[in-house]
Image (cartoon, rainbow, N blue to C red):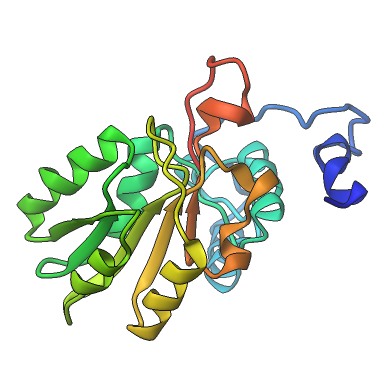
Length: 221
């Protein structure tokens, strides 16, 4: 682990404009503009650069959330980070961003219980089929693949059981069949594992765990 990465969080969140250690908390729903032309310019910038922090309404975030997104993206070495209020919301966003009715997904058996609930019950309402694979026998993963499979969802280590999987093998299988991959990296954290760099398409981390450290924060990235 390089010293620059070890000390990254000590330096990255400083608010140099106000000379404060932490950036100010900005809470807003309505964003004020001087003219309709300014609104359109901002909207055009957002379309051209979705990661640029251009906001025209509070649902898109504020400068505070944008700074957090930038920090987490650097930690994950990812293109961009989406923030959600809960882990369930992040898992939902990851799955529904790449699937449509009639698709199939394959999920690791020892997943976070809300992920299993979403996979087993809620996805049926959208005609999305879920198959679970044995993390100790990746042949069950490859056997479950069909021409309708759009996503392999991994959790490593697995919740409660802490099963460790051959992530390189999973990536190899997914790329062979041209299937997207997502991983719940909450327990591994980007400090020990960088899934995007390894080859995963999406990485999910709960801010409730190591990011906050005190079980007093609800959030997901």
